[in-house]
Image (cartoon, rainbow, N blue to C red; front, side, top):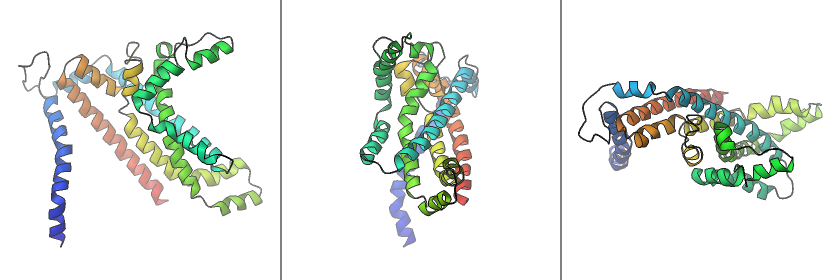
Length: 285
């Protein structure tokens, strides 16, 4: 019976294997040859030259720093605000179901639409909502995408990922032991003591899961940068994903872009391995 089951699973497993391995193998192949679309006849083997060119790109250091800043800032914002908002809407109140749906809705907005919404409706220095608020207080509106490009991208991405964190934390709070909270209240524990010693430890696993998933996906943020700042001004909002795009499509260098893609894959796997161990330790508690 086991041999029959394995035989029936073989086509699906084989298709999945090819779907994953073939693109990776092609990327590996392109990364070790000279492959520039402006020179279609040149496909010589050059070893690690593409990797050297990618890491010595003047924008590489800035892209690494921007990627880490974007990653860390969005995770901190979504975890902190996610926990606070989840606690706020966890208690029963009129219209609770509608509020929860509205809080989760931004997560289903496509990244490009999210970027256009913030670019034109919120952050436009002439007719944007934030500009109108600034003028209402007698202040000069800020040109967010020019003066604070990376911060603008962080706000856009955090706004879209915050509902994901809220959903996970609300789900976790639903399974919390209410008797412990009632006992703590009867013993005179303050709200902060209840949060620190009961709520926060209970949310530990959920926080680890949110951090792991967001870290993996945020390494590849692209649509928001491409739609709003174009990686600029200069390299002020260029991350690793956008640097690879510039090498591939703006520089027409498939070889260097493939080397950058492999670098990003290695970076994502290191982060995933570290976070899987972190989540595993939380699960053992």
